[in-house]
Every structure is written in structure tokens, then in C-alpha cells.
Length: 293
Image 1 (cartoon, one colour):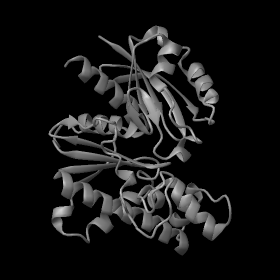
Image 2 (cartoon, one colour):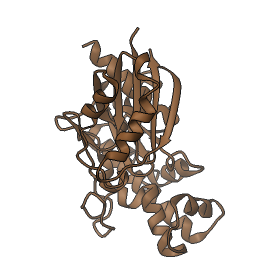
Image 3 (tube, one colour):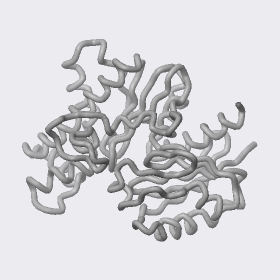
Image 4 (cartoon, one colour):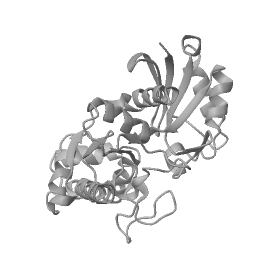
């Protein structure tokens, strides 16, 4: 049985675990820290992986951003402290001495959720609403990666042509309106500088009218994204995850906004079941599938 060292590089966390036959063990986590020189990320990766690589046969990485030929390109560099064009495959192979595969973290999570659902939804999407907004697609039971690793980057589809400029450079992306970062930025305009998305959400749960408007705007943008993905890919189900996506009552807000649309835009809407380990599990399952081809 192959033992994978799975690594999840996200906007807020850097996690690693051993995964064998879909079962996760020995999980460790650090806060994601990076700088434009990339040295801090290298150091943190080396620290995190030091106790793992002699127990694994292969490394597989689920990373935020676009992954092509082992290079991490951040579509929105703000989500990784300005990190961009980081040779993640080569760096991890140098640290561990093990062969390494890399894919996008939302793609990996989509694959994990597809398996968690027992493969009953041949066409499904996973949307994570967290530091940013990411998505992954499974079509006809196959995870979509794309020739350039871009498949499923639906968080950068258009939500509002008059909306704020996204970190990717496009105006009005879903991510610029719906993400935890965007919620915090909108909150800072109302509640004062340095307001966080978490603070806005707590105010929403307490019934604050302005916070409710911000969170509802986020959920409505996600509902429209669900509808767009469904009508273009003939989806059976969409799974919602991430720190915001799984927050209290958020899925209900998305469902409410989606219910106002015609039935053809309404797939089965499900909460993510793999929680914060979806990227780790999905990446290992994807590497296992690749080895069997």
C-alpha cells in the first residue's frame, strides 16, 4: 500500500498528513506565512515536512492558485501574501527527496467530496468560500484539471461589473464580493479599519443590519455562481465548503437566494463533509488514481 505525504497549502493554513488508502494520520498544521522572496515559505515547508518524508513513498500537494508544470502561479497573489511563480514541486522534492505531484486545492477538495458522496453525482462542483473563493469540477466522474491547471477557477467569474477590483486584476469577481477577505474589507468600510470577516459574521449572527447586508451579498453571489456552474455543466450537485461556506446559517442564505431562480438552475446543494482535510484527502486520492492509469 502506498503511503502519501499530503500537503495542503492555503491562504491561511499550511497542513500536512500521511494518507494511506484514503485514511489520514499524523496531521500537523502551521499558519501560512510567505513573503515575496519566498524564503519564509521555504523555511515553513521544511519545518512542517521534516518529520514526515521518511514515512512516505510520495508527496502530493493541494495548493491554492494555478498549478502548471509544478509552478504555483497565484491568480490573486494577495491570498498568499504576494507569493507568485513559486516552484512548489521542485522545492518540495528538494526538501523531501520524494517524487511530488501538485494540483489546485479546490480541485483536490472536489475530488474528496466526490468520493465522500460515493460517486453518486457524476457531474458535481465543489465551491469553497474562505480566504478566497475557489471551485473544482467533476464531470462524468472525472476531475477536471485543464491543460493549464485553470479548470474550476470559478471564483474569478463575474459577479458584479460595478463591483470592487479583485486581486486578480478583474473588476467584480465573485471572490472580490463573497470571500472572507472581501467580507472583512466591506466590514472595514462600515465598522472601522481592520475589521475582519469573522467579526462581520459575528455581527450578522447577532442581528446587525449592516453586517447582514454584507453576508447576504456574499451568499447571493455564491448562489449565482452555483446557478452559472449548473447551467453550463449540467450539474447534479454542488457542495459548499470553506470557513465561510460552513459557517452558521450561510448555506441557508445561499439556498434562499438560489430558490428564487428557475428550477433548472437549482442542483442539489450540500454541505462539505470532509471539512478542513478535504484538500489532503482529495490530493492523495487523486495521486492514487493517477498511479492506476
